[in-house]
Length: 427
Image 1 (cartoon, rainbow, N blue to C red):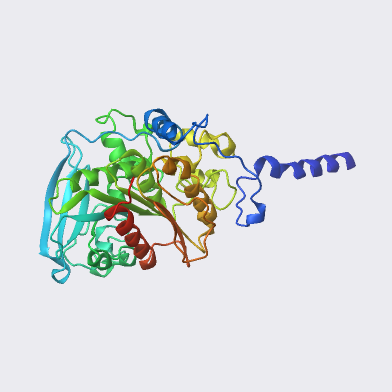
Image 2: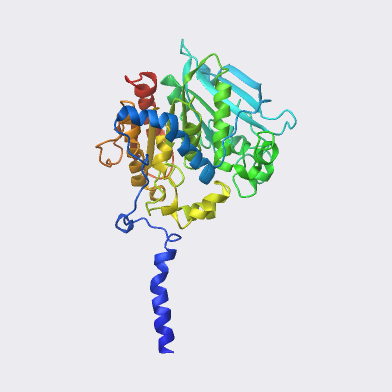
């Protein structure tokens, strides 16, 4: 009996060594050592060689690694995609903007496969407007209380209907307005375009069966399991770019993609795949987004794959408790944005997203940006709260919780003014 107890004790002591990853750490001194893969297998001799190797070989190689092991494929634009105007108001928001609501149909054979996009374009501009583009969580009608916004009837599981009577509730308009700051962006000379992410894929494990992935994957040359929800959402952002390129009042060379949380992950992935996007903004994207996966802090691969098994392809689950076997880490994803401007933002209370891991990941893109003669976060220390730092790669840590608020928008607009509107030499 005594020997059995000793064996049980020894086994219990061993458990953390091979099963620690389902345990979640938010204390920095518990992180421990980790080794990151390098951007290049063999360090190039100089900046010119690095840039050439990156553009001709390494970038495409890394992009394929992420497609095959994590996010899934990123298919082409559907040949039959068409855009239909649903509503337009040249005097929206008390005359400050022109609003347009368009429906992007992705299949000629199935009219249920579409995405509704709304855009606000500032009326005071004499020239085409740069535009912030991103997906929203709760429906287009929640980004502002504008009564002209068409309320979708597709998704009864969200804030689209009054749960008491099952009818459309006008009081639900604008319930996510603090996350969009339309008037502020337009006053600064930026248009804003968005679409509801559930138009592309409903966000639950069986959502793909009712959504785009089950309906047109074959038409796109894929099987549904060849891509996952995050790739579908990112693909939808590229389809918004397709629409924006048709708008005369939009400067299609200055399209910035932004996203919060899981939609920040999608924004990064869209920017990595679609180089028409001029700048990428990740807001609190955390694990599977900007944060380093090998850093044991906050959310883990195991937890994200358990909670959201539909976000990534099946192969990614192999790394649940084996992040050290990944052929990449997230700094390599962020590097795929180069040489375009990149902004990564965190929040002080959002430890689950690992703010330091997000900062370090952004900082580690420096060699690629340097090869283009650009500065990022090299030599910059992890900043105090509410202190934006960096150059073409920027970072801040807002005081507060997991959210995107006016402070964040103010920094993104200032960043866009400097690095997208007035491009530095060499960019």
